Length: 141
Image (cartoon, rainbow, N blue to C red):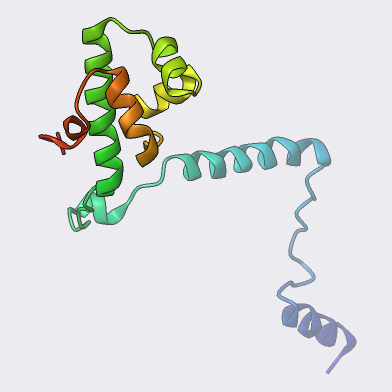
């Protein structure tokens, strides 16, 4: 084997022959737009992913979570209190003063965000001019 043959054999083992043209490297200016567009393409793909199960109609429907009964009870009781307070023409501040709390707390009671303490029920009943049993009659749950 001659020296030229060995050189070509070595070049072939690396995937290039001595006669293959070299591809010039891209300068930094050429690479910048390519990197930016590739990055934005990745971001676009992440934002608009397709769920194959949804597309094929094989995705199982999930049941919406139902609120616990105690939260539903607090909301129903709060609606009754607000309704009665409106009937009597009382402001939240007036009820809060009678009960011994802030109007924000009365608002939370009426929206069902906070539970009404048992010790507060008789005071609320007196303020709203209803019997204590009124709080437990015909709930809207």
